[in-house]
Image 1 (cartoon, rainbow, N blue to C red):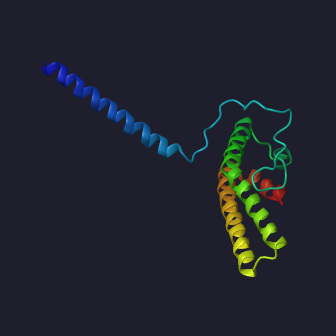
Image 2 (image 1 turned 90 degrees about the vertical axis):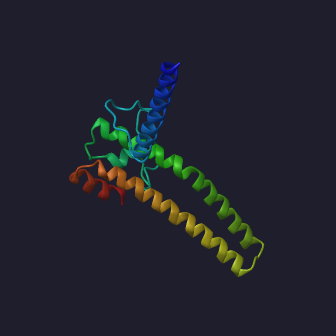
Image 3 (image 1 turned 180 degrees about the horizontal axis):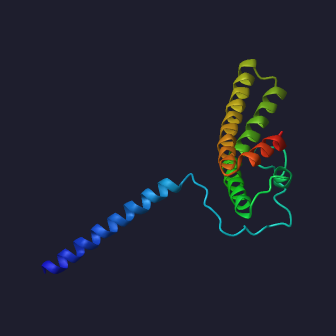
Length: 156
């Protein structure tokens, strides 16, 4: 009887240690971009047609002349995907708030209501810029100084 109790107690301790170890590991890796060993499979023949982070250029034109390795391109694509996921709902909300502002202006709403709506839009845009800055910093962290200089030059 004692052996069974000891066995059960040992298994419970082992399970709880495993759960805590997994939780800590997950918390540490939450904001890190996983490293790639192999190049990511391309969806299209060229890089994404969407704008890269907060630039008004696609990935291909931003990366032009930077001589990025396959793993850097893969990591940049992962950063872009995470950025798009995080900003998607924010963009939808911004569109909705802009529509509300347009509606208020068409209906000749009071100046205070229009100002309040404009402030909501400004705050959402500030939030989007902060998110963009965060992901841009992650991207720059994986670049060499020459690559970062070229990136800064190309994004303007």
